[in-house]
Amino acid sequence: MILRRMADAIREQNWFTVFIETLIVVIGIFLGFQMTEWNET
Image 1: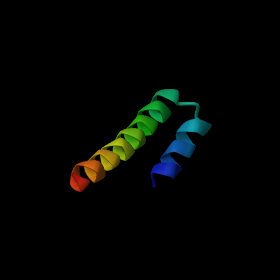
Image 2: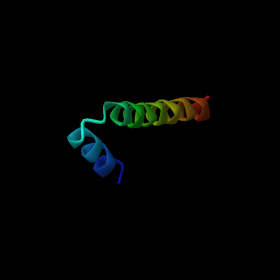
Image 3: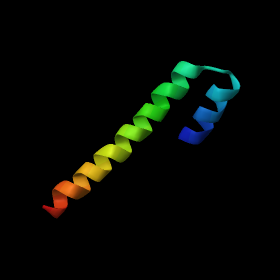
Image 4: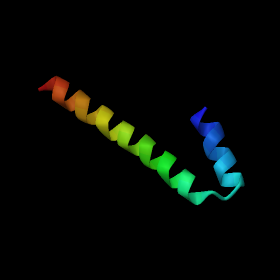
C-alpha cells in the first residue's frame, strides 16, 4: 500500500509526499533497530 502511494506521488511529482513517506519508513526502521538493541540489553 505504501509503495503504491509512493509510486503515485512520484508519477505526479509530488516530492513533499515522497519525502514524508520516505522519512516515515526510515524512522520506522531506526526505531525497530533501537528496540532490538534495547531488548538485547
